[in-house]
Length: 295
Length: 310
Image 1: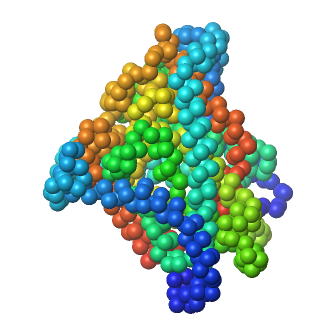
Image 2: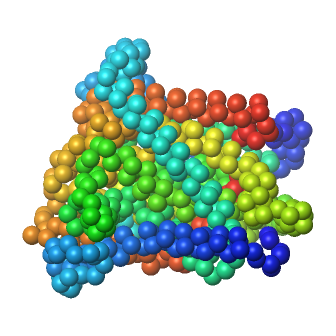
């Protein structure tokens, strides 16, 4: 850190440049959202083409009302919430148990099983073999297919395992001497102490589930089980080539103003993340610290 | 790693069997999940060496050895797709790799903590949104009729450009939007490394008369070099991926010739088009190349310094 407080002319110029440059960058991030927000509240959209469009030309909340009346959007929300909550909680439990087991020096054939887990980080079956395999498991069009494959993520498991290994062994030893079962040790002693890493992993998983769309596109055929992202995708890609490939259309809520409806829909699906974001941001940042230092 | 060695086995025997039994039970769900959802599909990879027929299933489809791979490597469409993958990845690497580093260096120079936090908060946001959402966003923003960017272009007297349907501009848009999304988030790991640099180094440099840029070049960069190298090695493995999520949500037939990558090709031809064996061969090919790239890069780095990953 620069401890001198004397600033010469070069410093001042640099600072001006730096602050300006970074401010412009922030603007390039914010402007598209402002633009989209304006569009979503507009009746028809940017038809007057005068200058930069950052405020609706004919303000209306009709677009949002139209979306709120579409049952598929709400089903999508429900499906997404279900997979996020169930998927995250189950994954955290399963991964933590496995990480705890692998963290114990007395775990039989520990090296082999660690490699067994880590190998999956580097190699996978690929889109098609996985699809055929899921089909073989009769999980096509089953809600579980959006949850089960994500219960164990090697990277997360290793991260949690490393964290557990940093916990003083005396904590576990004294509990064992007192006759506590391994489950008790994990859930009553280790986990409460591991809140930072668990919170981080849980949030990573939750955001991953919330934003997931490809698995639903591949494996789910019933539009009632579609997650929010895929419903949104259908609406955005309506009428384009991708639409033809994925098959079928959702009942149009378009009428004559597709652009503004799309804009409102995008915001509608973004809203939860935008609201939660300020609160969860610091956990993610901390998570990278933990991951990079100990990983 | 001494974990599995003879020294440890005496330790392992010290614990009671009940403890081991419970630990094994705890690990069981992980084992099951990995077998079912990670190793299972890997078994399915055999169809890359077979002529998969739906009615016969995986086991009964006939073996054809490397024929799928020979078809793959001689098909002009695959060559084009492979070329696109490499080109897009290299472009993204050239712009997207230095961007967070430079941004981190600039952010590090900001004295005002509040402003720094503000910039960081704003710049992290796009990372949390899916490409479905951002794809929709950019389709509107880059629209030739009324889109934000074209409005600005017209304000300066230019003609509107149909960015997403023009093969000449599509790649540029891919790279820019990708950096837009990830650069801010990428600064985190570099800033973490920068904050662990010993402040005394900067102080003694200041006493020796070093200016801001000299400090950056001779102290900051060399100190975060290990992080840079590690991330570089990892991005080498990612070259074959080129960003399926982004491309799927932004591309269209008008720009297939420049934007079709291995993954989108496998999706359309292999999965939707039901050429399962062919598509699996392409996927396996991709995986092997990725693995080799990481391995080779790591080896090269290992020979020249102690910064390798393994």
